[in-house]
Length: 382
Image (cartoon, rainbow, N blue to C red; front, top):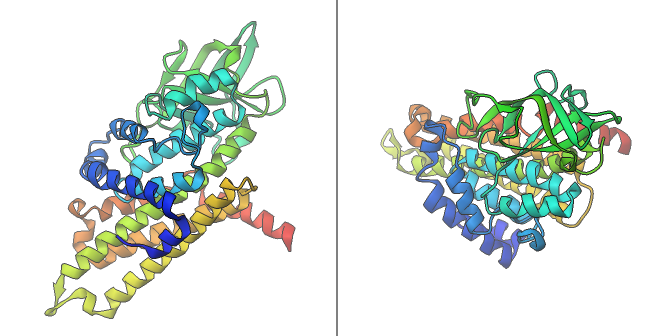
């Protein structure tokens, strides 16, 4: 697949990263993508293979085992693996953006060494525990509590819809503490008083393990505090900004995968004595899909470059995520329409991509939350 426009935006070094990720995706991910979905298998082996290739730690400094290539490198890696398995892309996003970024921002040197170094190899998986049954988009209303008792935090409460729950080895848990605000505390898997619920049965991203977390007098050392008490939401929001870039990459990669499959099918399928690409109803729809993907990719790469330059990019990340996720849903729907009845059959993969596209408008902040962030900025500027 030649994309001169993307090559121009990336440059030679990042094109090499993209080509490595694409080769891995085509050779290792594509053959098992349908199985990951059908068997609801968490793609741990594939995550570890990405770690072995050095493709998990692009936003982590070299001193902690990463490559420090930046957010744009991470975006193109996520895009490539999501062409075949958006589930894998989502699991990696939760591991790197929501998991690694808060530790990188606020962790002590000891926490970074113990958590980040094995995380960039995929030998330790991370998860972030914020959402609760009554606290989703309104992040400040969590009810899980942590009380300092001597040298230990005692945690009580529960979390819902936590990505990577189960396979994850470390959980960054947001709790109410004595200080004003939300505090982030690191809870290792297997800690007494910490239980993980059964994986949720979902419409989409089926290989992504999503479950509840339960805490009953769960005790962890006070040294497991991440950053400052009361600043947990601040760390989460920075991870969420990075996550919106990464999840936008999942959406762009998913849409690219749907486009490629629809185009290949359309060039072979015949109707009324012609391949269906001879009909403008089909060829023009493919043109629309290509334009939509290219526009979204342009926004994605530019916002990733903003992040790499050190600029504040909260609003731009929301714009990127809103644009890419809504585009993703539309393009995957058009792919099914081009393929007709075959598009609904799992053999052709686009039905899986269409299902997975649903979550891109929900994860890392719903489209409605994105519009709220963007509108606030608009009203300040004009």
